[in-house]
Amino acid sequence: MPTIDCDPAAARERLADAGVRIDEGNTPHERWRADRDGAVAVAYDDKVVVQGSDPTRLTALLRDGGGRAHVYFDGASRGNPGPAAVGWCLVTSDGVVAEGGEPIGRATNNQAEYAALVRALEAADEYGFDAIDVRGDSELIVRQVRGEWNTNDPELRERRVRARELLERFDRWSIAHVPREINERADDLANEALDDAN
Image (cartoon, rainbow, N blue to C red):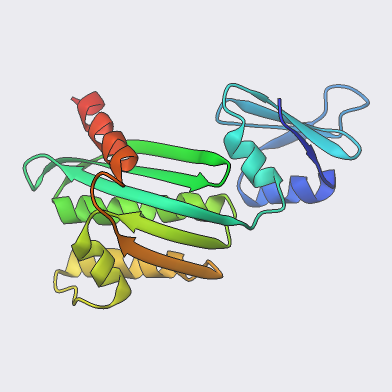
């Protein structure tokens, strides 16, 4: 049960900005309560206590933000084009902060890779990191985002623009190609999402 020493009014504002619903407290000692993704945050005079099965997402929103994360992404397509899914993972010095995988319908492998990158960047932005090191095993996506290779496909060009817009939200960022074994968790999450969709 994480306890976060903070100004409850500022913490409430951060949660509201992230779209979290906030209710009045249940007792005279509780200033407010908020719940999201299986976790409940309860504010007292000088702290917020988070309870539930997965408190990580709420605790990240409640902290002052900032910090650095490694962001891993991977897309998978069976058929190219065919059924596709994305996987992503956010890691800090404390370990895995968040991860996810979800089917995205029919897509090519490159479309799935870009969708995974965008979803990973959105998650890193939601968590309030100010510096990120992005890692993926698609050399094409990495080089296109860095501007080293042209993006001729109009749909991929649009996704590249979205990825760049998200990257500009961070004070510092880098993106690099890594071997598949370094990106194994994101790859597993994408493939698990594909398997679960069938």
